[in-house]
Amino acid sequence: GHVYCGRVAKALPLYFAWLLVPACGILAAILPPSPMGLTLLLVPSFAVVVVYVYAAVDAWLLAHQINASYSPRDYNRASVYWLMIVAQLVISISLIAGVRRFAYEAFLVPVNSMSPTILAGDRILARKLFSPDSFPQRGDLVVYRNPTQTGGRRFIGRVVAVAGDAIKIVDDQLLVNGKELDRDPVPAESLSALGDQIKGRVSQEKNAGHRYLVRYDGIPNDAEVRQDFEATVQERHVFILGDNRDGSRDSRHFGAIHAGDIEGYVDYVYWPAVTWSRLGLANQLR
Image (tube, rainbow, N blue to C red; front, top):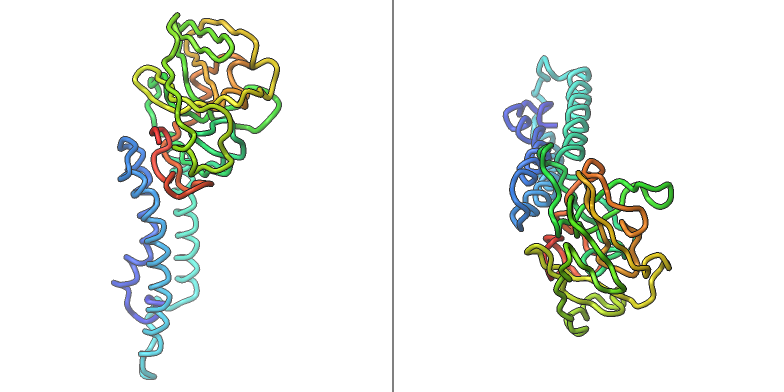
């Protein structure tokens, strides 16, 4: 509309406003996870919508202000408008696909296997920008390819042990390299905002400097979970558990996960299923 009305200088910045989204997405992936990073991911998307609404209204007002003596320019042709539309579609789709592949990808979590950290219905952002020689650390929250033929294509879980670690599970006890991980009970009233999403015992677990919540319902979803387990994590692999220890299908069932099967690190909950107070960093003790 602005191009037709002869306002090319105004049209160009409005036309390219959508570039804020991939540019800020890449910048957020480079920076450490923080409230600022989430702002860089969410605010540009809303800003672009506002800009486009403004552009449409402003172009409509400009068209009504032009008097009858206005004569179209040489570029006021259907072919030029179609070229602009096609170019924007091709470039924007390519850039957004690149951000999804190499910077951040959004996921909807349908199950409670990571409760109380990630709840069923949460929408999360997983960072995919990491160097080829990087390796997951204990406490990392990751999205990885499902190594089995059942269930979803991707799982979410917590890295509790890395290559070379000896891991042992006896009932509710989790030992890494012979040392039982410290756990502190969490009062039920401190989790009241989560409603009926949380049942059973919740504790704060500490592992390699990370602190996170784990949950035990007392009724495992699979008899295999309750069996004693002992293994040494092989080279280039990590051992992954769900924070909902009695309701997760994880490395206790299918073994350690190769580092190459990890697709991203979960940084943010951008659309929480329960209470907006959970909006923000995903791997931060709440």
